[in-house]
Image (tube, rainbow, N blue to C red; front, side):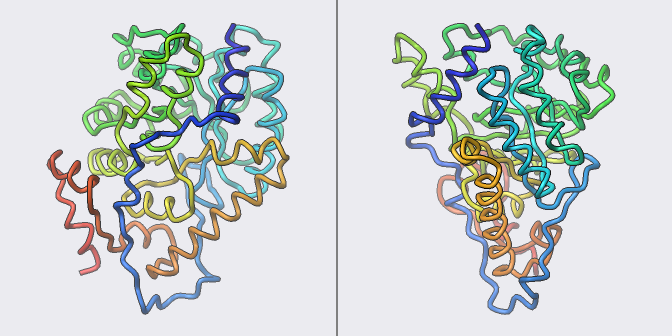
Length: 351
């Protein structure tokens, strides 16, 4: 039953080690170049931005965590209250469970109830895009995410591994819905060729959701009787920093960088690499169980860390942060250069 699976996923993410083992996000290979003369006042730094036409108080989106089980309603309520207070964006977990069982709709609708003015993003899986219209009608949404999770489906005992019509169905959905459609990976990253195909299909934004944070192969490994397949593919995917550069170098639509964002410094690096906002999920799960005050406190810590990073590179706003000097080293540099991307230009942008 889908609802029971949702609860299993929540509990596993809360109680088990579900993050990548050896593979990292790649942000450790990215060095923002220190500016000894910042020439700005830290207290005047602005984190304000706009994403898909919605003004945000900071470039942060709580990416889809849950929904579809009664136990998830309180979690979404806490996250939504925090999102509304700080004027950041929030996505929800896959709405398929509520489309199939309308009794579960309140576990999702609570998000808009508690966040009436900020960016709220719906969610449906690429294998179930025929449900997209019903999911969009469930509440007042600002955008609809279509999530791509071939890795999870391949490891999941009951996974759907027929992806032959994904792109065609995404294109149809962008034409059908009257709200923007976001293509969202779920933790294994997006390469530039796929990003170009998605842009051509009409998506309004891309959430790259790279490798290095939560591994859905890991989550499904704990649910499988035979764990060998999940163990083998636990670290599969494109590191978040790599995917961020590949996609921002290739398309003109807004990019959300998520996947292993664990500090405000990670956020600063993602934006400096070209992302328009950063997405976080797992780091807020424990706080969500504690209530909205704990979520707000954690988010404010992210925001303060982001401001300090911006101060130390002399960026008074996000536009300036996107143009600061940085150095890409190590495996991230090797990967990008093998893919034909010249990394040295990032170190000389202020010249």
